[in-house]
Amino acid sequence: MGKSSATAVVRVRETISSSSFKEHTGTLSLEVPDYLQIKDMGIGEFVSSRVFPVGGYEWEMRFYPGGKDRHCAGNASAYVFCRSQVKDVSTRFTLSMLQTKGQVPVASFDPRKRVFSSKTPRYESYDEWGHPKFVERAKLESLSQLGDGCFTVLCVLTVVMDEAPSLQLHSHLERMLEDGRGADVTFNVANQEFRAHSFLLAARSPVFAAQLFDLMAEKDVRRVEIVDVEPAIFKMMLHYIYTESLPPYDDGGGNDIRVMQHLLVAANRYGLERLKLVCEEELCKRIDSETITTMSALADQHQCKRLKVACTEFKSSPK
Image (tube, rainbow, N blue to C red; front, side, top):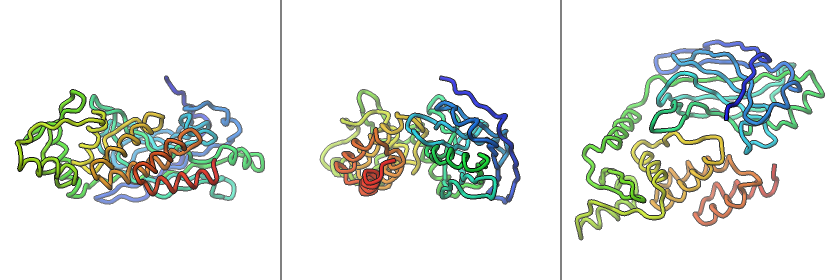
């Protein structure tokens, strides 16, 4: 379903504030002159900045007055969108909002590190990152009625140009996973086969170590049947084991909640504590009145401390 955008109501100021061999940083401000004129825009509709360049790529800001999707109920969303065709562009960005008159802070968030990738035949698009619940719509409407309704969304975006050696290693390992060169074990997951390298799996997961090496002393383990894990989830887990990062998935809707829930269960099952924490962090951002029951049950069943705390906080003061 197509989403419309409106750019006439915004004014943009852009600067390249710093540049070095490793990083390029750009600052962009998107001015909304009268929030009350756009407050009735529908879910998924946005006002956008014009394109601005940082680090050799083209970017734009998108502000969703009615929220990016139905999970943003009662909130406006703000995102950074990469218009260039890219693969694994590392960034660091902050998004904030000021009441233009007096530069009074309305919303602010800590810096986020995110990797942007365009849609490919293998993966869905990962070209937009931001905050689904950027600021409460009621707050914007109240401030607009008290003042002139003019707000400024500010983005500071840093593109990391020089990858650390560890990230180069991860890209090499990802290539090994993709082409299967040197693989010595095959996993059968619901009739889909995944080839992998037993030494790497054993180093990363105590469960795989026991399953592969301990059993190898008793029999030749070349093929392993995996049950109770979906092929897509197993594929994402393998990608994380090899690269310490998640492949692109559907970010922003109901599907990504289900993906993260299933991936958390798999991470817990195979002793991948860091992946489990990554999933918890993402799920904590998606707690609302529709998901609180399943999130609480998930936290209890799989000993997810962070998620349990977030659920408790939501129950005590639901938004």
